[in-house]
Structure formats: C-alpha cells, structure tokens
Image 1 (cartoon, rainbow, N blue to C red):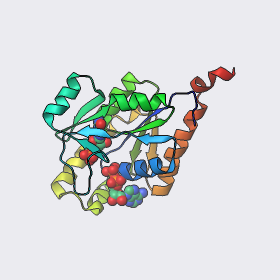
Image 2: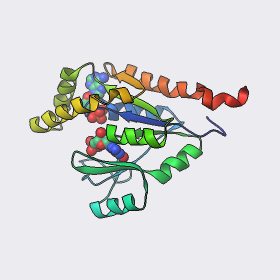
Image 3: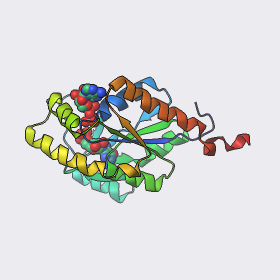
Image 4: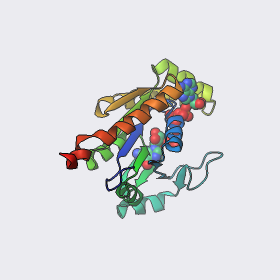
Length: 198
Ligand code: ADP
Ligand code: 5GP
C-alpha cells in the first residue's frame, strides 16, 4: 500500500471486443490497491447491468449540468452517448493512496493525460483486426451491422496508439491480466514516487 503517497491513475483503453472488461474486472478483483472508477453515462442499461455497479445511468439534462458544474475529470461522446469520469471520486481515491482504473475510450484517455500527465496509459488489443472481429462475433451481443461499425472505430482508435505508454496484446486472457498487473506494480518504483530516499 502507498501509505502517505497518492495513488496512480491507470487509463485502460481498447477497441470494443479486445477484452477490456474481462481484464479490468479481473485486475480490480485481484488487486486490493486498485479501485474501478464508475462512470456516468446517458446510454440505457444493458440487460444485467445495475445502476451504481457498471455505470451511474443518467439522462442528457443531468449529464449536461454535470459538465457545466465541472463534475467530470473528462467526458466524451462515444457511439452517440455521453460518458464521463466523476472528478470528486477520482481525486478523493487518489488522495487515499489507491490506484484508480479508468476504463475509458481514447478521447477520454487523451483528456486525462492532459490534466494528469503522470497517468499510466495502457492500450489493450487483440493480435490483429481479424481476431478482434472473431471475438466480437463470438460474444454474440451485437448485430453484423454494429460489428462493422465497431471494426471501423477500432481502426480509428488504433491510430492513437502512440499516445499510450503500454500495449498489452490479449492473446491469452490470464497472461494479459498478469501483464496489466505487472505494469501497475512497476509504478511503485517510479523515481518520482521514491525521491524521499535520496
Ligand atoms: P471489451 O470489454 O473490450 O469489449 P470483452 O472483455 O467483453 O471486451 O471481451 C470480448 C469477448 O472476447 C468476450 O466474449 C470475452 O469473453 C472474450 N475474450 C476476452 N479475452 C479473450 C481471450 N484472451 N481469448 C479469447 N476470448 C477472449
Ligand atoms: P460501453 O457502452 O460498451 O460500456 O462503453 C463504450 C465505450 O465507452 C468504451 O470504450 C468505454 O471504455 C467508454 N467509456 C466508459 N466510461 C467512460 C468515461 O467515463 N469516459 C469516456 N471517455 N469513455 C468511457
């Protein structure tokens, strides 16, 4: 635990279907020093989703008020819905010494990097686009049309790869989870966090 130290922001972005939810879920449940930031969104809950667990579900009016009152550390419009990271939870959790995992899109990731330049930026991807399409089809949650839109978006998102610090290829899920855990662990040893010793 980082007693007396602030936590780290860990941004995890990935094209839809690359395994971000599977990886983030496992990392948060295995790592007691990491907390998942629950975003606000205007999209409708999917089957099985619960308000306050996956997201705080809200409407356009309330979301826009939160933008005006600067309640978000970042927000973006993704696939026609608004998504935002609540700033008060983020700052409070960092102050308590915990690491905060932000599962957000590349637009949001870049905004966080601007406001919090020390944020650890991780991009998750499958070995190639063909495997991504296979995973999206196998997940069986989207129509062919939606899958094609997601594949187009994936190419756009990949063009921002060089803005990220780490790339984890999700071939084997357990290996990918371990890789993300290793990256998070390595943050403990950053010089900026250990200056007091020398
Ligand atoms: P995302 O949150 O990035 O959209 P998911 O975590 O929902 O992606 O994963 C997409 C699909 O791929 C899911 O059906 C998931 O079970 C599966 N999956 C995730 N990682 C792997 C992997 N390494 N190998 C095979 N299938 C995987
Ligand atoms: P989904 O609707 O499938 O849960 O998420 C769609 C996309 O929105 C994913 O890429 C997810 O990472 C992103 N997202 C979720 N929460 C936020 C957020 O607070 N801010 C931003 N910028 N993107 C988010």
